Image 1: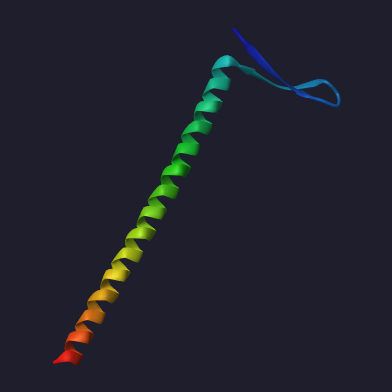
Image 2 (image 1 turned 180 degrees about the horizontal axis):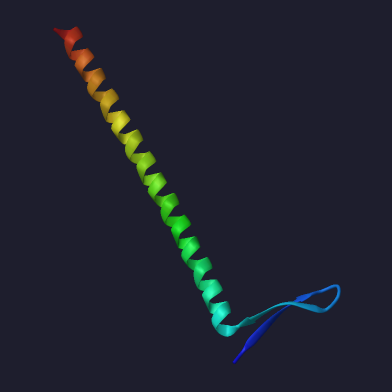
Length: 72
């Protein structure tokens, strides 16, 4: 089995040992966390865009309503 050692560069001491399974689990967890953060960012952006679109539509309806009242 492949092992990976993490060294202290000053002392050349082994700080940690990882098996290939532990290393793959670590990178998989990083990947999942990265995807979750990306999804959360995309959802927040979509919600923000939707709120601005709805606000714009509401302002347009209010403006048209006020304009119609002034024309009568």
